[in-house]
Length: 112
Image 1 (cartoon, one colour):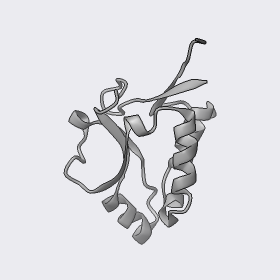
Image 2 (image 1 turned 90 degrees about the vertical axis):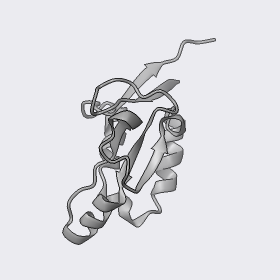
Image 3 (image 1 turned 180 degrees about the horizontal axis):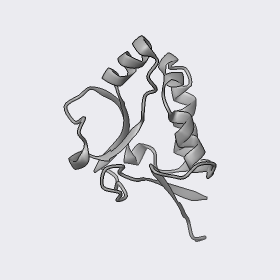
């Protein structure tokens, strides 16, 4: 099994639990509804985020720490009408290794 680590797109370092998140801003979601602009899921440390004051749909790094977490959150998000307006599919492709990973890192667990 692999552990999933979010990578800050601003500084390039891993996001430890409690220090950052993956999020999509409600402002971007509103714009996407109006003009079809794709919504990006940002990965940022709290200290690196330029959107800290904006309202957003946010998952903390501790909520998305494994492939199982990713599967659970994907199932949860599927019912959101706006999910199709986002690049969540690209995040899944990054985890699957289909496209270069910019926002996630898979770390192989050692057997106990």
